[in-house]
Length: 150
Image (spheres, one colour):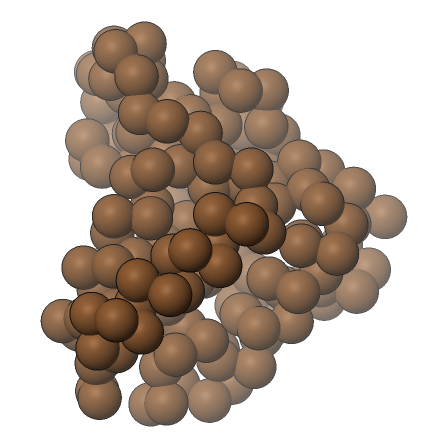
């Protein structure tokens, strides 16, 4: 993998989801490869969403302390981009021009404003490229993290 990649929340949550063993395995592999290649990036929005989802939506959920420790790990492992007024304005443009929902538009806006070429997520129109941002579902059957982007 060589493309600078923004990681969406679902990729961070699946390593802790015991109900989805295949996605759990895949997410762990993808996150490890992105970290090793030093091309994985997160936004503060994704960190907040991870904390919320991991303490509320998993069965069993992470404890607040466990989720906090995981967020600290992400802060040490990946480049983090802050939510800024420019991101909000660009996200609004994404909603208006591409009919993204606002939260997904913020993900796209962070990638676009920071010259990241890929978003890893299962929530977007997989395979689409919008203003240079390519959306990849790392959980798709045809996705191979070991050969992707080489």
